[in-house]
Image (cartoon, rainbow, N blue to C red; front, side):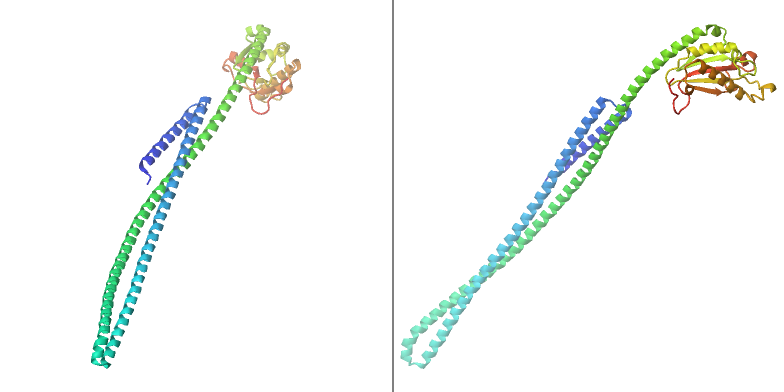
Length: 416
């Protein structure tokens, strides 16, 4: 019979170790970014788990083979015992038949002798005494001797029959005892085989469950491996895109720096007079122009000084492909005077109208496409100075030209 306990303990320990390794591999993938070395380690782990799964499958097949062998041995023992019982029964019946035939023959001989004695005695009664005495006495003695011999043979035959019957009874008793012992042995062997088969089946079921669980673990690890490979590919693609983006950003910043320097050089006087402020804010270029230079009070018509300034700016504008030129009008908090309300009901209208005037002039003096220019009016809602002072209000009355990526989603403006 196969020993179950050590092997079961070994398999249990093996399964625990495999699950710990699988958990470690999964944990490693969860807490760190995937790499080629991690994928290789996952491949090795999956290969090890597959090998152990194959070994478990081999153990399961071997246990099934042992169960079939035990079953065949039990069937062979039962067939042998049945054959022995049939043979003993046949031999006993054959011996009893032989004894019965001998007994019948002896009884027949005895009856013949008794009949001859009776006949001789009758003949002797009718003959003369001398003749009878001389003639029949010898025959009578011979017949009596024959009768005695027959009686002795009959007694001997009866004794043999009794002995054979005793032997037959003993043989039957032995056969019954042997059959009982064989039945007990068969029952014990059958019970032991059934118990062993049940144990093997239980172990086979456990191994099958472990195999299924291991197959699930392998499938999960393979999925994790695929996910890690996809994540690694995505990371590599993201790194490539980031590198390309950095290159494009650096190129854009270089162009913006050059544009910024050109604008500074061309507007040096206005910058020194603080009527124009140029700033580079991350990936955007901001040009703030005081409203007094561009417009008269309550008007949206550009002054000559403003036209000259905007022409210089337009000639030096060279936004990067995909960038948008935003022209944004701003006012202070002073409401629109009554004399201008018919044209500009609010600061919203005034700021938007002034921004539109600047945008039209820049489009006329540059090669920018209209779809790359956007106009917005902010009124007094985005101040850069204190509106409680005249100096602060003057700074807030301005037009801002903002150059950079689109501020809102949707289709990007076409390159001009």
